[in-house]
Image 1 (cartoon, helix red, strand yellow):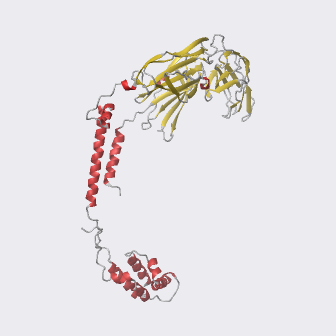
Image 2 (cartoon, helix red, strand yellow):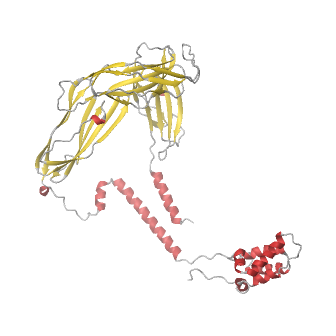
Image 3 (cartoon, rainbow, N blue to C red):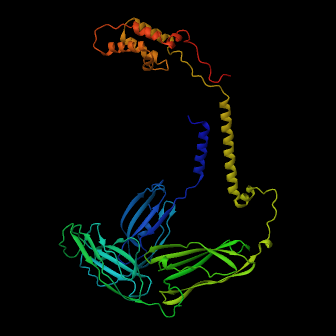
Length: 550
């Protein structure tokens, strides 16, 4: 049985858990933010509030988008809370800058999302072909080691199985990164609905000169005749379809002459350099203490392995300890975003004004096609000798750790924890009182029912059945008599051979086809020979003393 105080603890924990407010979230995201006119995209609405059975209000989407399809998905990922997703396939009704307005789910609202819808270009695509590949290169020329985006789109006006495969993009003397997973959407071309599978790549040529983007091969299985194609298609369902893309020439330009000769070549679309000091520069720095400087270099259009080290030049005024750099990168439809973070610990040995040299990093802006610099200005730090540093004022009686906690905690937070500690203390005192009261009470004696037969009466019933030579009545009386003892009949027979023989005779009379009448005298004599059976005739009505005598 669970102690009563345990229920009190459980109830208290329940009320504490219920008092915390659960903040449900409702978010919106798209698979891409830039698309051409006539192309569809996916809008994913996600909520982790599964307690309410609500659906999003899609009315704000009707003015700018056409809803092609929608589905609801419930995801359960342990240990994360369950979430509900609404996946919508939308087709924009206009071009230009379009905003997905906030979508409401009950009292929750999603954030708006900006889209760029480009005008469809008439590139003379072979629209009469049921399956074809369109290759789009971001630029016809690019600097060495700079990022170049390649987009391959597989158009199919006939249904295909989900076994499509595109050969890997391999280019000599170039680094190729696939930008995420392929996107699947729909596009209407000349009144015909086409399915589109889009592959995005970032290419980084490693040497200058003329390059050729090789053709790619796409193969998939035909799923059957479709009603969208404008030309007859003779393939049978399950037949393999193979198409190839065109080769694309590419010119890779060398490093410009105006770029500094002794600097690392950094061609990027954007490059930023930031710093953060711990402790802040407003605090007093003393000799022998360490100040940590975190330098973060972020770049758009460069891999993280190409970002240079930011370690400063050695100096005699302070010692620098450098941790291992932290490299990271992520992919998007605009290419590769990378960062490099370095943590420098500076220990000053001399007091006075100490100068931290400026950091000036040249890089080439591939958008404006000009040289730029990412830099941090020089710093002058005032270092105080450790013996001259102002000492902390002597503390009064409040020198306990609780004094510092009061200074760090908000008064409302401090009051909450004080009340919570008081509740736990009162519950502990109450539980201790209950235990002390139960400890000093005598053990509870199970009441004896006056209606239940005594051991003496059961033994008399067994005697009458045995002497009457009735095996069925004897069996019932024997079982009732044996239940009053701690030993079973099998244990009794194991330590007494006479009783074992008598029980075999009784079982033979009950369950065999013997016509010899059974005599119960031997069984009764064996029962009387048991030690506890003899003593029960005289001590039947005696009770055991209490377990804890007063």
